[in-house]
Length: 363
Length: 245
Ligand SMILES: Nc1ncnc2c1ncn2[C@@H]1O[C@H](COP(=O)(O)OP(=O)(O)O)[C@@H](O)[C@H]1O
Ligand SMILES: [Mg+2]
Image 1 (cartoon, chains in turn red, brown):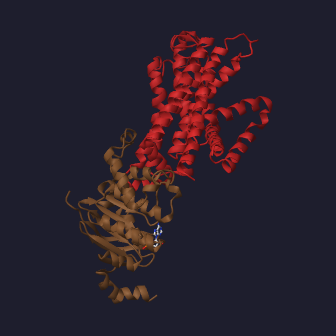
Image 2 (cartoon, helix red, strand yellow):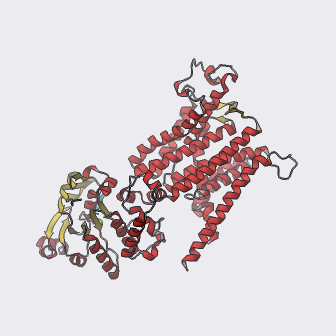
């Protein structure tokens, strides 16, 4: 057993994965172009496939962000959907402001639901959202701030493991209940919809769909590279060390609270970005996005793909959502059972997920 | 930097009414090596927990130089220059031997500093030197998870050397080791001892005799006897505790 053969197997796998990733990105990038071909053409990609894969790309960014927190820093968040939803709401607020006087009630400033609920003027926290730059800042800052406060409270008190998971789950549930309320000023259970335009592009055109698709794909690649870089530095190794033996890291002089907080906030911002890209593509955001089930599904994507590998998270998001899309049309009643079964099966038989399966074959 | 003295006085730790430490006093002078012995449950590990901030004493004073150890957290105490090797060796299994040592190397500890970290030639040389000294050079790229028990102990001692602390606390470094491994460990510790203050907890009286330093005997959370190994071995109270059971 010489060192070279041991090294060769993983590096071949790594090369294969890299080639696969580049291929997959190119394939995805071709979707909007192939969508332009006549429907009779063999290579035609349907509108449905373009729009559904645009959504999956956003889910993949969410999965990446969760993998950074869970797979590397060991923070099993069961509330990452909340950061996604907050980013989505921040984008939704911008889109609502852009509707302007084109609403059903024709009010020059107030969104329809506010007119309906008898608002006289815009609540203070809606100010500034008419600016794209401000809204984008909020897409990152609002989830980031929530993660900062929640993380600081938990990590400082050394709340870890299942307790932390329960707290994050409670957080997303509490936010869901809050956003359901009409007096919060976020449209209650209807949320936001009927968006008209973004950056001057009417949203119901193919060009807008393609632009959003490419924005999402570029974001995914950038987020992936960012995570790859972070985890390849000594910071990434500190996170791994914290994941495996948190208290030992403290005795080396590392401030574990700060390190975990940094990763958690970065992760929450990434999830917020994913939500912001998602909302204009699906055309709606409502409190259902905060539902605990969404966050749990995201954990299943990462577990299925293989946590702590980044590429596994992306793979998991695409494959589980692909399965879901197919199953919800083929046998809609089965989906939740399949999801649960999948999680149990992966935990028991594939602790390293699909990537682990590939690694096993690579050896 | 001029050396600092470790000073414990009147330290008590109570767990649910059980006194693990009882009015303990211990002074370790700069550069001194001290062996701490005592039967199982005497409170040796708990004493280290107090010094390193893992456990807050119920009462008493614990200081290093003019720093009050009872008010600092583990990371702050480590950065003060107090390093610790645990009774149960704890290294980072998913990281390689090299990465474990690099993580321990004295350097800025914040997230941003770690993101921007580039190992200098000097740092690399230091890691390699420690791998050489601990006998782990040929395991550099192996994950720590596949090391043997003895190698894990040495890796942890190596991590202490990388931290370059002023005071080292070493908890039962040779427990479960073969004779050859014990010898290697004793040589390692002797080499570190020169420049630092060291507190070694050990059961093995022969090992302690070989260290040739002052010995403190703990029993039921307090100091029973203190002095040279010959002095404590002939102390009737020590004989009673060790042999009278
Ligand atoms: N966290 C704890 N909770 C309760 N009892 C403890 C705890 N840590 C240590 N003890 C008790 O304190 C006593 C001293 O333990 P320890 O310091 O580990 O002894 P030694 O290292 O000398 O063998 C033991 O009786 C042990 O059971
Ligand atoms: Mg002990």
